[in-house]
Length: 309
Image (tube, rainbow, N blue to C red):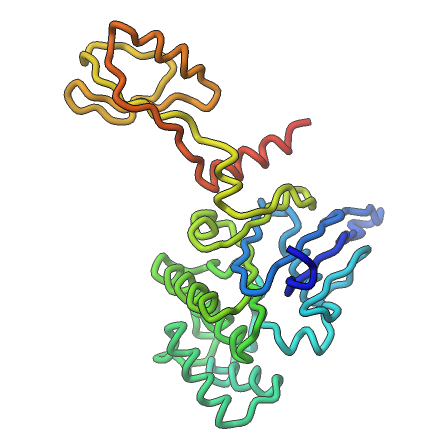
């Protein structure tokens, strides 16, 4: 991808904070460079404290970088030109308690300069889409955490943005709510919108994303298509064999057994050739299949290896 194709460009971003009374410097993000292309559905993952939210807040122009730059559609982060085409849902959003959801969306529409008729139509459509139509005129102080998250998602879409940035959009949602948000993200993606979202829910990333980036200890550790990242590793080897039930197997996990047929899983570092040779005369091998890792397997392995001294 070239920069001319990119909607969001993060270039050598570093953000330092001073903490406690001794004013020690803490680097939340270090030398991070990343591009998100037009029309991508892009996942941004990392453990707590990795620097995800700091990166997003810098990209939104809410905090200034210590070093580096961020641009959106070629405009500096935080500029009016960038914000006009941007929708943003922060982690744990806070809204004025005494507004209703309908009033919140009307306010956001006014900020973006939408006319009254367009605001009403757009608000009604979005409240229906996020499942809040029946609670549209209820004060936000009476909303549950999940309902507030839905309201936050609706306000992020009020200006029909070209780039949607979501920081932990599944937070506080039950399984049905998560499915609704996933469906909405897919719908936006199909309409050509660019979506950049951070999350801890790795199966959602694996299910949704064109590409994914992982950040750990403030540094970008890897980025690429989900299939490419997962093809570079595997979660072990599955062997289906036929053998007497009395056959003992050490160092493997017996996953299924049905009569004389059993499925065993060898660990990643197992010597598969030696294991199969040891079965000679004891069992008949039916299939041998490398298991592809899930994104969670890959993520855990990567972050654990990075934690090694």
